[in-house]
Amino acid sequence: MTSRSCLTVILAAGEGTRMKSALPKVLHTIAGLPIVAHVAKAVHGAGGSDIALVVGKGAEQVEAAVRAIASNVTVHEQTERLGTAHAVLAAREAIARGYDDVLVVFGDTPLVETAALDQARAKLKDGADVVVMGFRPAVPNGYGRLIERDGRLIGIREEKDASAEERLIGLCNGGLMALRGDSALALLDKITNNNANGEYYLTDVVEIANQAGKSVIAIEISPDNVIGINTRAELAEAEAIWQGRKRRDMMLAGVTMHAPETVFFSHDTLVEADAVLEPNIVFGPGVSVGTGAVIHAFCYFEGAKIGPNANVGPFARLRPGADLAEKSKVGNFVEIKNAKVGVGAKVNHLTYIGDAIVGTGANIGAGAITCNYDGYNKHLTEIGANVFVGSNTSLVAPVSIGDNAYVASGSVITENVPADALAFGRARQEIKEGRAVQLRARYAAQKLAKKAD
Ligand code: UD1
Ligand code: MG
Image 1 (cartoon, rainbow, N blue to C red):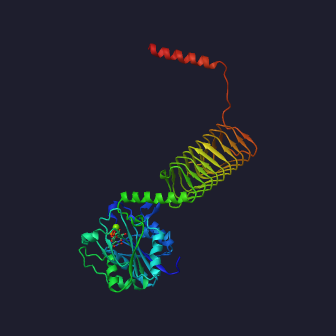
Image 2 (cartoon, rainbow, N blue to C red):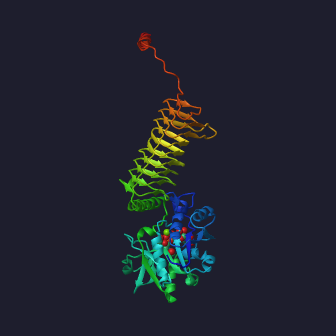
Image 3 (cartoon, rainbow, N blue to C red):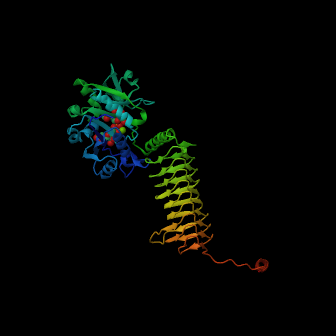
């Protein structure tokens, strides 16, 4: 990482009308994080965490999304949308503070990677004045072509203005740029709106810088980096690319995945090496999985911590505050919310545990339920170490079960159970010898009488 100072200008004043949304475009999410925050994360990684955010009117939420990632953010309102160069100049004050490097990125291009920005900054360090980030799309139609001569970039030709020969050029403009801070403003100020659209094009800086004898170059970055989001269809495509990258990173870091294409991560999911993820798992925000844990198929998690060597699913739901200790087991059709499950404890089948503490080695039987809510307030259930809770038990909170206690199945437990006690909370069973025969005879006679009517 270089010690050069860096300002990043994020352009996000576009209206995003093609999203057909009440939400500003850049606040739509990929992996649960607003797309503009993905951009901020990438620039933060590249040392460009002084951010000048260029927004349209009423963009407090956009600002908040960026501030969640970087602390040094100034906001610049572009009241009229007169083009990308005009947008950069809305941040004039920030640029004028004097930085070694100025990065210009788009708020709607969320897949830009730190490595690409690092590469551009390295070229500035090596003496370039303007660095344009180019890419080779499968089909270059519609993009501006990068015209190079002797390793220098001499112009960007929009497709409609390009000659047949220029159209054969595969290297296109990705839109992102890096500029040397001490000459950036002077160059940008020379850009005019003398073109068919009457806009101030940032791309014009290339010819202007060449005329001023500056060093202008293009670098090639991977096409994913410059995918812009304009519609919900493009948002979904970007999500798929993001998920693909994350799955690959996870596997390369030692996570086993049987069908990676069916596992969906959040931007902040943490999974340690040697965890196993079976097919069809959805991670909401705030989930971590410890080493050696096995997550069986068809699970949905959010705000949950899964300890080392825990065993979860299939079909488990972990809600915020679920905290599963080492070697614990949460089985099928089990929901856990705001509850600690102790080391080696088992909650194997058809159970709801909410607002609870389950002790080390406890065993919670099938269909046991914590009745944590009385319609007004939530209450705590405490289950001690090595407690056995029989199947189909209701634990009516607030209630506590002492260590090593044993709760008979079918119980409704409303009072605290001391350690080592056996608790029954159900009607005593009665046996009536031979009564089944009598009962059947009576019902059969009733049925016959009805038919005769
Ligand atoms: C831009 C490039 C084009 C490149 C393409 C890649 C220019 C002139 N053109 O075109 O060469 O191939 O990106 O995707 O730079 N914005 C503002 N204020 C404005 C105008 C734009 O904030 O006045 C913001 C937009 O919200 C968006 C970004 O700048 O985030 C890019 O603008 P957009 O209109 O999408 O530029 P393109 O036409 O895609
Ligand atoms: Mg665009």
